Image (cartoon, rainbow, N blue to C red; front, side, top):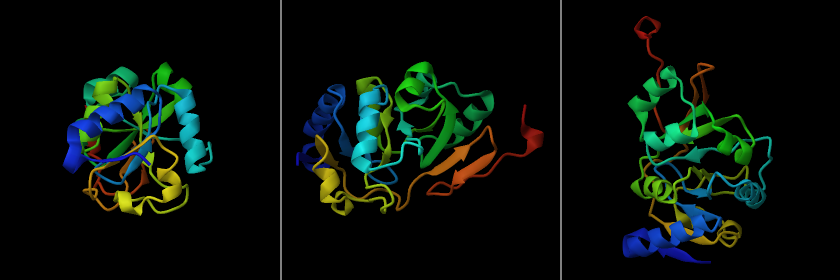
Length: 203
């Protein structure tokens, strides 16, 4: 297992993660909520490999993270209503279901995809450096508990990836809150508090 610590070797960890992602390899990395397993979301081969490693049913879509709102708007098609909520809550522990552009739809296999801008500088910087969204799904075997630290990740998963980046304990102790703005529905209540705005304020 190739493991590197952000606390001890930040630059080396960043360079190794960027190299692995550009080579379409899979890594384990920290976010603000739980540890993620991912690779570039523009590659169907990478997406398929993550499903295989996690033993996850392909009927369950994967989410992605982006580095900032500019990158989000390059790969997704948020509505005016989407952007209202995104501006208010990103970066943070939220995943918003958005209409994806063709490149992401083709790789991920879904027209609408969950998108995060995590409150984790390392993760955001990675996405910007590789110029692509990164798959962000919890670093666990499907159905098992989502890990908040590298120590909680099972060895089977660690041995299945090119790199494990240890960023210490995650800021939050639970996954992100998942929101479908178009359907006006909270898909999963997680770390982020969420409330709909009053209809009278909608322009």
